Image (tube, rainbow, N blue to C red; front, side):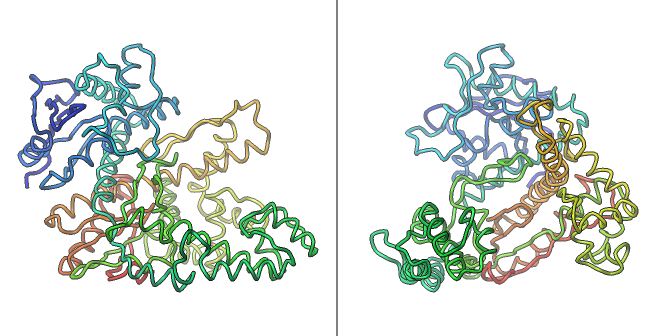
Amino acid sequence: MTSPSSASVAVAADPVGPGGLLLRLRADGGPTGAPERAADLAAAVAQREERERPRWVWAATEDLYPRLLERLPRRLARCHDLKLVEALLLGHEERHGLPRSLGASWARLRGLPVPVDPSDSATDDQPVLFAADRQRLPPEADPLEAVVAVHADQQRRIGLAEHPERMRLLCAAESAGALAAAEMTYDGLPWSAAAHDELLTALLGPRPAGGARPKLLGELATQIQEELGAPVNPDSPAQLLPAFARVGVQVASTRSHVLREVEHPAAALLLRYKELSRIHSAHGWAWREQWAPAGRFRPEYVVGGVVSGRWATRGGGALQIPRSLRAAVVAEPGHRLVVADAGQLEPRVLAAMSGDAGLAAAAAGGDLYAALARTAFDGDRQRAKIGLLGAMYGQTTGEVRPLLDVLRRRFPDAMRLVESAARTGEAGGLVRSRLGRTSPAPSRERQDMSDGDARAWGRFTRNFVIQASAAEWALAMLASLRLRLAALGGAPRLVFFQHDEIVVHTPQEQAGAVEAAVTEAAGEASRLVFGPTQVLFPLETHVVQCYADAK
């Protein structure tokens, strides 16, 4: 395989049929030569990828790449996702919330009315090969011309960013994440129907017919009614609250954190009922038939779906697979799962971002909290952890206050970073991540914010700079890892990503090489995002047959 070239190629798919247009671009985004008409776009893309591995420039990866994947002999190395990059640039320019489709970007360039974005909810099956309607271009607009013009404008705006090279890296990582997301949906996470059935039966009883409650849920419902002395529906807070009151228990709601403080036996039964009911509704038999019907769970990832840059999903609950059901994730025969997660990621990000020498030294080894405890908290690891998490998440009262005083004395640069971000948020200002992702503005003008609102927004911006930068590290690691897996021949496949955890499904004989690739990707991500630093970002890896065995 050739090394990635510096070339970029703009792509526009035909609205109907398998064809499209391709056009080579200059470094500044301008066109070179005439467009190339491809009767078979997937074949043309595959040939170009084999010859030169360019950076593919298109309206939105999620609309085009999934429809190419089945036809590509190897995965694409790089792309520039105009929709995702537009969102990053609009945020950096303090224009959060504006439409970001190709049509919207084109309209802003031309001074035309800006169309609203299409819904990001899961789409129905479409009668055409490519979902061109999601680009929101006017009928008279040329799609390839729009791609080229918007890309060139984005290149110009990246150059105007506060730190252009960092923003360029962020745009590349976000776009690479979109490639990985489409590939993980296409490949799917191995899911054993037999193991899932066994787990559900043990938790809930046999599968009921006709949408009835499973046996154990029905038994719990009966016990709750007996303890409350009333025929209440355990799914109805409107019935439960007065029933609790009749037995002398006043509760403000039936939320789990409230029920945990209640000593009445009905509360414990209701907590168990709620836990099992969530499993039944969110990951039960009907869920498997919809989301994992052929032995693979294929969630639809939403790259940058959270303002901090973390991903979301459109249905399926991929980011909340209960630990009790992870035994259903089983590698295929002759394969293993390589599960890797970054421990203590956000505290390490704070150490690297702030440049605090003391905190960086604590983060240069294995257990950051233990090192912190030895340095500043008389060996008390729990106090060190509570204090540092309080500093990052804005807990500043009670038992945390004296711990923060210690942190301010011993780690002034780290504390200065988070407290400055908090003050900026309280004043209604915006903060940026390491690479330039920008926090949204408060929903109301500063003069309308109460003291409580201001403090709450300060807690948000305090954590935003850390959480968003951690998301960037994870994204850079993911982007690096997918290229390293491709270099192993393409058989190991990324099949799951969640904040700071990845799962690779690999032939058993390549598991060791995958572990090495994970370690190398973590190191490369650290260098790319933070530059030279003594802070370590270790990934704990496990080679397992079943996902549950990695925890």
